[in-house]
Length: 352
Ligand SMILES: Nc1ncnc2c1ncn2[C@@H]1O[C@H](COP(=O)(O)OP(=O)(O)OP(=O)(O)O)[C@@H](O)[C@H]1O
Image 1 (cartoon, rainbow, N blue to C red):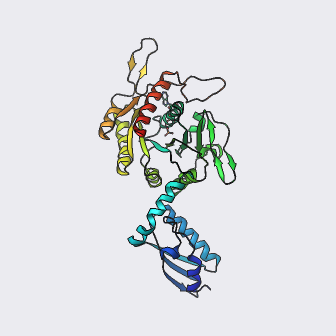
Image 2: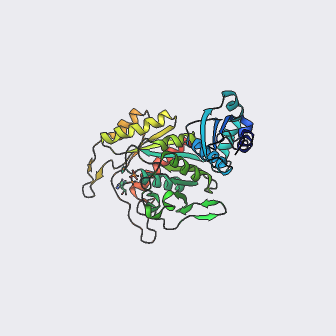
Image 3: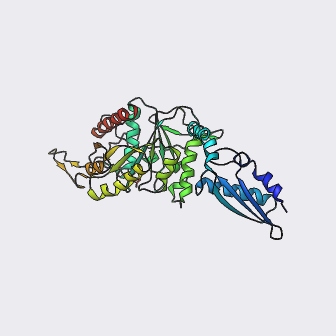
């Protein structure tokens, strides 16, 4: 059976997931007790941040190490490291994270596209803003993180899958935009039961394991609502800015306001509101019909103290025969032009 000294030796090289220093360096092994007859080891470990997905990973790591070396059962308690230790290592860890988020030194501008509820056109907006930014000469990537339906590949008419080079995944390029989607990695888009920590993990791998190259903009298509993923995004990329999509119906705007308030709470800058399906324009008379109500976008912008970036009418893109992409508006399509204006506003705001 393991002795206390042996347990200490086994745990010393384990890393604090936030400080990227070993438990030996952070003095993170707080206590060890052993019940010989039951082969039970219990340890108390201090880390920089408790109750996180990283803590769960660390827990599994420690349990695995101790069981491999003879423990039958393992009990772990976590506590927070004292402030002075965190402060000693934190700046270096943060710099490291900033640099390594995408494995490149120059960070892109992160733009998260959020909505209060599903079906308002968030993915459509993500795809078309990406296209317009690309047409403005920017290098653009998309992370399709809408785990309730990975729609970006279908919307852009992507049929191939990412290649793997060494340890890295190469995003799929379509119309000059780099795309990565969980949809690439699941069978026929079958539903998956997601737990909060898994979402964060997925995002993390999309940053760390994908070879993005140099990007000017990386757009994230978030799941609708205000859930864990907004917090994960904040945690991973405090500098991310947000675009909120709503339909003009006041109730939709009300729900979207909650998503927006989450952005405010997590200190994400809101670039503006996009009102989608704002109206239907009759081809014959040119008359506008406000099928889904009116004013929701402006109301939402007022609540969030931001601006309406644009209003998009109801209209499907036309289909190109040889390059079918069901949701991509061409540059000369009236909505393509609208997206162009919105993208230009975003660039002006972000790069000012
Ligand atoms: N302006 C528009 N005119 C016509 N159809 C649109 C418009 N915007 C989006 N749609 C259509 O509405 C449907 C929902 O759009 P989309 O998937 O982008 O919404 P979403 O908010 O991302 O939904 P979810 O969160 O469920 O993925 C799609 O079929 C899309 O083609």
